[in-house]
Image (cartoon, rainbow over all chains, first blue to last red):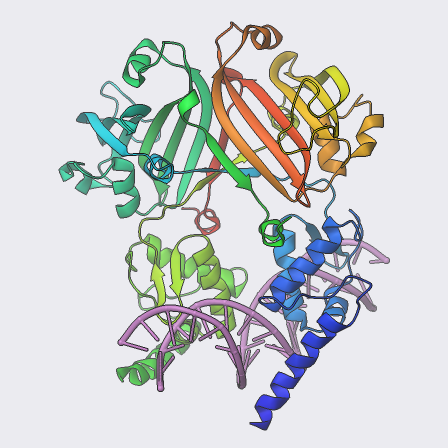
Length: 270
Length: 270
DNA sequence: AAGTGGTCTAGACCACACG
DNA sequence: GTGTGGTCTAGACCACTTC
């Protein structure tokens, strides 16, 4: 029991030191949530409010540890996370610096079309238009697969409240996913079926804008030449291609959007 | 129950596993890099190779700690990272499970156009076409800014090897970034200038496909109606809008692409 | 050479969710 | 209740890089 008191006593001191002292310097913690999060907020706040300027050097972990009254490990976790998020740059021996010129690469999420439609409160449907089994090189060629490899091709349309919004053309590597040959896709769309069933380890995307061909325009119910968003995705597993898919979506019925990034900023409500 | 027995049994095995002996159970570490990385690789390998199936429960941290012969803290770091990357799902009291159906949101990076052009080994140039100071509501309206707020508008074109590839139309909040009023942007593009100078904490993106208007087509040197990629980005800092920008890029001269995601997979070369 | 961040350990307490 | 992951500490050693 005395152990426990001593322990909690230390912790109590720590938290007091944080919340009670340093009123003016802005190093106080807010006492909400895990300590490392509080420190993240405190440090990010200093930076975002300009008290620690871009390029400026921060106190080292030891000093921050005493400043906030927590262990060095805890400081390390907070600072390392901020560095990963791009607020700080760390260099051994040199120290930790406020990042200058955040060349951040804004991340744009690409979601499953069914999820998007459902989230909008609309009725999602899909229809398989064509389904063929063939071998690579016969009529079509999947560059990353050897010639002669068995392929399942799927063509389908996705609807939102009955309106066509996306065309999907997909190749599936039957060597990698043989079960797909027996799947009718009555109720579950191929993308969902695959994601539920087949593990993947990497994916490549390309997004571009294209004018609808006459055929695509007819399928999607728009004028030929209408701008469409084209998304190509190849999914791999253990260096083996799983599926290659080409989505085509009408420009004014579909868009990609996302708020980025920075965990700490959203946590901070900034 | 048999937990105890199993536990000590596992511990015995662990010591063997630790020293590099592996009986084909796949629990051996490769000795390369930090321990937590080795454990990440080992666990991810088990999953990706199907030895730990989707939905299956992993040993708890204590058991993994003995299994690999490292501290629980180190195991925790490895497993928590894998969970963040979507391979695992963790639930208190219940345990850690191999993720089923990774509904990952593939992330697509949006980079600075200058960086993209330079990386392609082409010559990047830009030209400011128009620059105006005005107040919100006078002719244009920036929804997230109060009426009457001072705004700088910038219109410019970006070139790759002399060919126009992107049109930029930008609003800058002069209350937030007053220095921008004195910046001529002779040598540095506005996007770069802003990113180097102004801290931001969050950004929202929307990407869509649009047909080029006659005016845009003329500027970009394409036929009217050509499909273009439209990217809208609003950057905020401390809940205050900093800049709102609209990029328009010719579909067949510009695309977004990215390889996603999974750190461990790339580390694993899978 | 020395200071910095990076990692690791052993041990502890806690919050939470499940049985 | 009770097992699980989540967090924290004190102390230690190491790797790297700049001084």
